[in-house]
Length: 154
Image 1 (cartoon, rainbow, N blue to C red):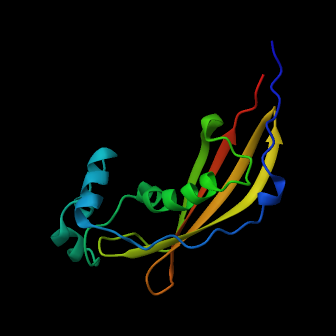
Image 2 (image 1 turned 135 degrees about the vertical axis):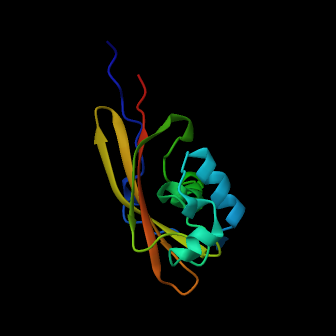
Image 3 (image 1 turned 135 degrees about the horizontal axis):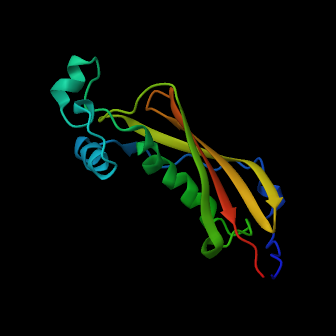
């Protein structure tokens, strides 16, 4: 069996903070579309009246909706020329979310991505990126953490 050889990611990438993304205005229909795509059945995800009755200002996004905002930060990371990251060799290894509050339609959200860890394991590089997502007042909403695995070559 051939041994994998790590294609090195720039280790100086660890600790890098990327610039804030363009603010993303969360739309009601986007929340509804995403909810249908992930089979979120709660009335809070579809019906503004049900959401308001529960104390929200509009429909509530499912927890995984944060990837929509996170994607802009990940795009900055993957497009940076000095990272050593080869997108064609990337697989998504892990995802988690840590919420301060729910995302609701009408939120204007900005993401700031930080590369928190780079590790080599079994010929693969594992890049951990934390994306802090805040609302228009600067208050934290959610942190989305992704582990990207860049597969080594044979």
